[in-house]
Image 1 (cartoon, rainbow, N blue to C red):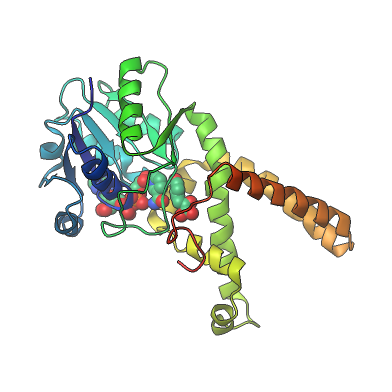
Image 2 (tube, protein in one colour; image 1 turned 135 degrees about the horizontal axis):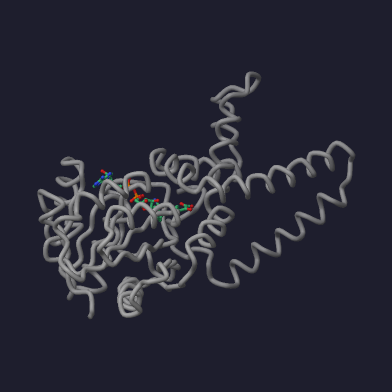
Length: 301
Ligand SMILES: NC(=O)C1=CN([C@@H]2O[C@H](COP(=O)(O)OP(=O)(O)OC[C@H]3O[C@@H](n4cnc5c(N)ncnc54)[C@H](O)[C@@H]3O)[C@@H](O)[C@H]2O)C=CC1
Ligand SMILES: O=C(O)C(=O)Cc1ccc(O)cc1
């Protein structure tokens, strides 16, 4: 089965980008959409994020052969319950949540009879809402699909083909491993950004005006990430608790080792680490993972 009718629940950055990307890159797909917030529905209609904005979740999913939940991870179960009575038999239900094991459990609980295949497009920005989406968001980006053991192979292939039609590259992964990898590459970096920007604004002897006025490139990059959606990130940390705490423990140990090196004047330890991390940055760029879009992910954005 190919996916021809897609319902998008949640019309913010990611839901809106899926609607725009489908409209541009897979125009044979008919899209419907619904958001719990009527104001978001009105703004999504103005921007033409999907073909049809529906007044209820049931209307949005009634004819869909693929439903994608694009709400904060803490709202996934509620969104799944809102569609459960109206799903077409055989429809595939997926999501875009930034953590996977707890979302998979919530969706399996709310939709025990549906074909549920969670996924995570590893693409986004610090912006949110229906104005933030853009059609190119997923191009050349990974989408990690985390099928449960009993997932039908054809449904996994259909889901992968859908994401590829929006320009993404697809990788299949176990949900628990996804959560550990993303804790390292995305969740802890966000926590660090939130912390350093908070610390800077709490210092008694440095004014907020000085922080803004003299912010060098590194701090500006942190402020971009620390401007990310508070509801979404609160939910990510609560839902990926175990993996985040595991990585945070390692990070804290490494930070303490650097603290000791600075106190002891141990330049070799500092230099060795900075040399190793520069190599990692170079290999990310060589692999083409650095974003080439001129207005995306830059400190001056
Ligand atoms: N922002 C990012 O960079 C990325 C986010 N994600 C994941 O995508 C999901 C959506 O994030 P964004 O689009 O950034 O958030 P967003 O805040 O831009 O949009 C979320 C939308 O969901 C709606 N909503 C909330 N609860 C709902 C419910 N129960 N039923 C229907 N609609 C509901 C909100 O009104 C809002 O319009 C999250 O799970 C997030 O973890 C995944 C990849 C990147
Ligand atoms: O804006 C950034 O730097 C991001 O890291 C975007 C992002 C946020 C959450 C995800 O689950 C995936 C990507």
